[in-house]
Amino acid sequence: MTPFLNRLKQTLTRARDGFAAIRVLGREGRPLDSAFWEDFEDLLIAADFGVPTAEKIVRGLKAVATQEAWSTGDQAVARFRRDVERFLTIDDAALHVTAAPAVMLVVGVNGSGKTTTLGKLAKYFRDQGKRVMLVAADTFRAAAAEQLAIWAERTGSELVRGNEGADPAAVAFDGIKAGTARGADVILIDTAGRLQTKSNLMEELKKIRHVIEREIGAPPAETLLVLDGTTGQNALSQARLFHEVTPLTGAVVTKLDSTAKGGILVAIVEELEIPIKLVGVGERPEDLGPFVPGAFTETLFEGSSIS
Ligand SMILES: Nc1nc2c(ncn2[C@@H]2O[C@H](COP(=O)(O)OP(=O)(O)OP(=O)(O)O)[C@@H](O)[C@H]2O)c(=O)[nH]1
Ligand SMILES: [Mg+2]
Image 1: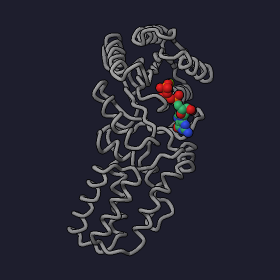
Image 2 (image 1 turned 45 degrees about the vertical axis):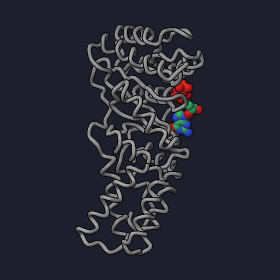
Image 3 (image 1 turned 30 degrees about the vertical axis):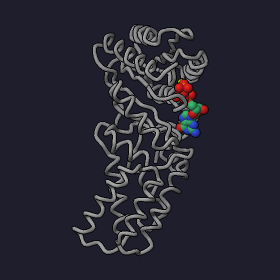
Image 4 (image 1 turned 90 degrees about the horizontal axis):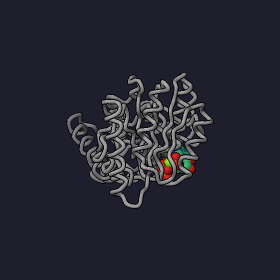
């Protein structure tokens, strides 16, 4: 097992706790009556699956239960485990890095973990021997560029930044120009999570995206939405909003080491149909890695009689 998967297993305690009740439900030998299904749905909602996804899962399980004449809850929970892994496994979950340079735009609300994720991504690519250009297009506060500068230093990446209040799209433009001129393999663009108003933020993101498309003649290789896994269902409504403004190629779910519950990941994939490409499990440079549905599911169901 890779060190990252080990770390994922160690840090996913809260999410695992959320699944404990579901694992227990499967062990009680209960008949598949309406009380059972109600309890199941409640547990799914408590584990952050959200109402639509919880209802969908229970509906699907009930149908198979009838078809296959199941008699007890353990059958439903065993099937549920397989479903979770299947739901989470969607095509196109690997990062697109073949473009030269591969331009990646990172978006998300403030505090979700964008800048930290970019810093960790810089390390990830540097470890592979790639040349990385970090672009601080979050000009809303000076501290944002400072934070990215520290990551550039730490990871041996190059940095383009603008002054506080500078036009973010202009900084993105400079970053792409400089990155291309210096032969960067990857250009990672940080954005603000907050401006004076939400519509300002969305307009800025559209402009940045437009600049990228104009400069490289293609959409960004990745437009990654960073979601704080501990914010639960709020993360979903944010995701919808960003997806409308700038089509997303994937999500990064951060803070899985904190109070994030596992169901939110399923809800993101189910409701938005975008792959989760990366997960964050801490604040250290190495605390970011690819999302592996099988390992994630195994961890959530660990310790149960059906694992
Ligand atoms: N525990 C934990 N903390 C994280 C993780 N990712 C980010 N953080 C922390 O979350 C806080 C916010 O992270 P930032 O990267 O600054 O978030 P941001 O989205 O850039 O925020 P703005 O620039 O204000 O929009 C920081 O204290 C990070 O260290 C994670 O995976 N686990
Ligand atoms: Mg930031």
